[in-house]
Image 1 (cartoon, rainbow, N blue to C red):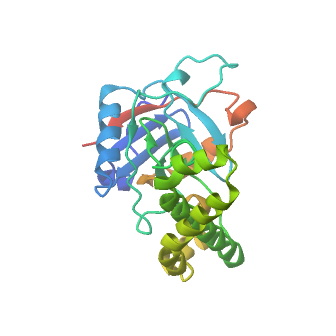
Image 2 (cartoon, rainbow, N blue to C red):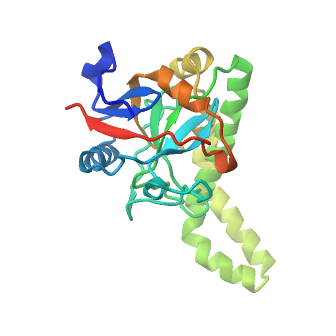
Length: 259
């Protein structure tokens, strides 16, 4: 475990240092995501993260940690479901903050069981990602439009959900179809506006030069970024992993507040 909190010339921009045996990662937290910022600082100040591990590591994607059950966990123990007992309301500030390399974001459960996209109270990930071609970014852009289209439809469907389930149980196909048509009518303006969506130039440039994970944009809360130590992120992302993308050798963390 590293003991020094020196991370280089960008340390003045950092709020938190994540110490690991591979080196230190300096993190800046965003003021535009105050719930996540304050929660992360609180947990770091209390020592919540100390001796936890990066339990999910995928090269060219991200490194994830913050599960309290990972502290002293056996090699066979399944991880990824733990937390402090609460969630944090989503603070998605897209397109200002996106999943460029080095982005700090909050893990969460899937939309199907978490339509409000609330974040885990403690689990986070740091993006490593990869560099994409313009053609690949074009495809990601279309995927984002499709995903957002479904999100819009789900939003307008939500008030009808209970009634729809009753109609489904009664096998009233005609009434279900009418309800679906009504939902699409209510969602029509937003769906039409979405057709003209284009990824901002600065985001496209980042993904085709620095890299990142575009398919996560506008779906997870990005609440900070690495200001020093991207090489450490790369080193951790490259470690050998086993079941559930868990490193074969624990990558233990400790956090220090800079300010």
